[in-house]
Image (cartoon, rainbow, N blue to C red; front, side, top):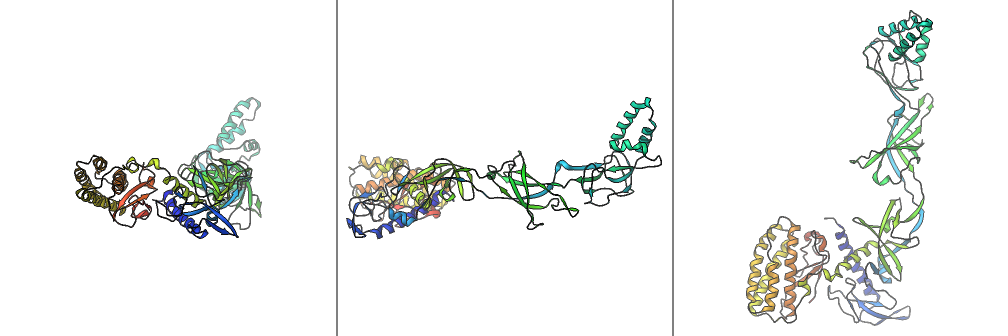
Length: 572
């Protein structure tokens, strides 16, 4: 599971170690003042680098993790956490190499490199088909790639039906036959003759047996489907022409690039077939039909392609690359390294002065090469952290998890002070229950679902024996009843489901262990550990969880092999 929580846990441990090491070298905890540059500095209080809410006016150790408290000197902000604020001492800032940059109004530059193909202008592409059955007598254009002009003869075509229609038209020469002549001309148009060819019939030799097939546009022959002497049927394809004087460079623009692309933008196009040569055109069309599979749409750039030495420089269907010259209007931006993307949320840490930093949720716009547009959450001139913010975010997340006692279960927070010491029988029953709880915990730490189900089957019996041993002691029976209620662990089918079921059981076991400690009962091998990141262990989990172990090494049951040693011991 590669989630933000993995990064947070790892970074938090690094940050705590860095801060602890730095503070340890900045002054001895046992002293109330230290000399810096010949001046004495007064120690305001002592604080845990790992758990900033643990403070003391005397040197000592953190009551949660056992780490040595570090001094906070006069003029330093310490590590108190208030809401989204994260104050850091000057020494911590140096250790983390915290660097900032101003949010500024600047042109949002982005290099958009695209690739596509060179195609011809679809609006200047023609297919010539036979209007009538007949025979190709002669070809005037006999190869693909030939350049032709509009009205130029492509072939001589013999068709008895067309020849008869031409003769009838010539015979309708009298003034009283004008209407018939118009009808005959219309018929010839339907047979494929142009108005110019019809007008020239008056001078055409009566001995001529063929008619010419003319090019409808100027362009290049891209396909030739007939040969001299070939008979063709009505509708059969003869020639295909394309006008290559203007080419279309077509590329795909992906979803994240569309905010930058607009009609009229200039694009510099290059192709490996013409090294060192650049063709420049403008975006003339953006396809409104978005492709849901590729998450992109087609964009068209028109390029001039004149004849050079009797041939076109840009060939049909070439591969090409383009550099889109994007508009660079001024917008509020921050460096890309300042933004941390945490799921759907984008955040940055803003310097407040005096070593204090505040976490801001940002509304982002377009992403440039080096900067990101900020639409909301920042003002021009504010300084954002561009280096060290990953560690800062990890520590802030961990601190917020630890500083939320309201999320702890009532069983963990409620420790009655009037519990009597356990009798020998009760002590043995509690010890037996801890053995079962430890086995369930070990199964999850080992990611062993089969073993968890096997141990879960005996937890309720162990809890029942525990309840029976407390007969006659109302206060202890109330505690045992909580344990029994959480001990109905049914068979589950995956580890997330197992950890969800384990959570109330584990918290009840921890509450029992803390009650026993409060009552003065000793279990030398028993340890209580806390994980501040259980909210990522299974859906709906609390932000922290605790468990008991009968071995000293941390074996986290919430994440198993993924983060086996994540957590800290809860000291008595």
